[in-house]
Image (tube, rainbow, N blue to C red; front, side, top):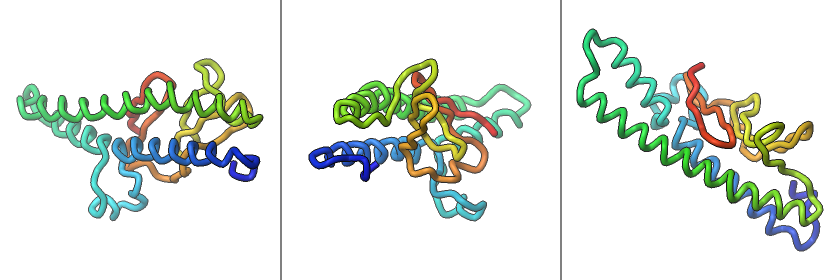
Length: 164
């Protein structure tokens, strides 16, 4: 992308990098992005998806209804997930759209926003991408691992946790 920016448009590259950093911060809150091997589970803090998976495992093993503590922990984790999804929704709605307009006005057609054929999608490596029809523009670092057992699936309206 930096090569496609002409003189005077360097700020667009900085804005795109800033957007990537904010998306990666949301990703890091939701999943353990530093986890590449099973040993990394012990070295890196779990993401919200790991906490939800552990909670589901505890609740489903019980013979009785979930305890009050399990319900409180579930509510706490889900409120944190909701905060991150609202942050993601706001970024997609405002920042990504504004950046796409800025690129277009600079004569660089990189980003496409829409619900039918384009929008924020998950690429094959589990990273976020924004792409119009055929041409893809990855806006994340392209990490190969998003977590051991779950990773986020993104849409333009909501971030969902999906078990693998």
